[in-house]
Length: 239
Image (cartoon, rainbow, N blue to C red; front, side, top):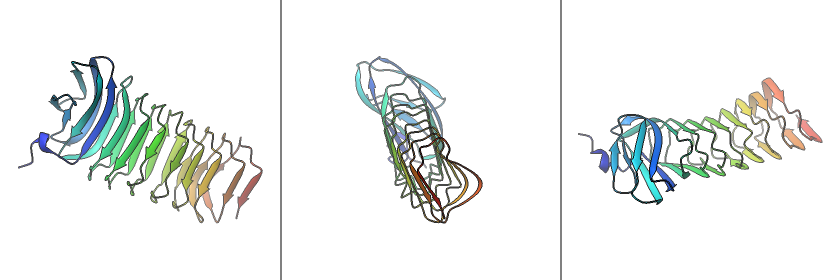
């Protein structure tokens, strides 16, 4: 017999939000067993649909927690929701995570999600901190509609196959330990430094419309397309 949803201690999503309006609406799409939302004020809701309304009696900071026996795939969307920090932890079966339309989100981290292979964050323009260092199997990282994420460290994510970051304010990305990021698309950012591994094998490398002055591709292979136009390159080495 599976444990009662209120007793599940793993597979949890924690959402910290500052409630300034006592009428709060949040949207979740959850694929798991026996999911339940704990609202942080003593109330809880068994997940049976995708749109939930919860009225807080007082304004303030609340940590909302989603707990489920098993979590495979999670989509969280919440335009105009007062969410600032998102932590995804202890989700051993989680494979795909989609975070959409959280304009007030400033930081995201994943801990103990060993099977997470896809992370998609869109229209969260204030995101400034991203920590996926413990998601070692992460293969797809998609970031769009973000203004303040200046640096990404992917040195521990050696299985990155596709990294996409369009107009996110990115200045630095470290891929020195990723030998085969088949597709790297980081157009229209403020990229000043692009650190790549020796013997990198690409199918597609697009880093146009950035602020790169130097780009070194050591023993790199690019079989489809390479575009570094609209930078201020003074040094380009490919050998």
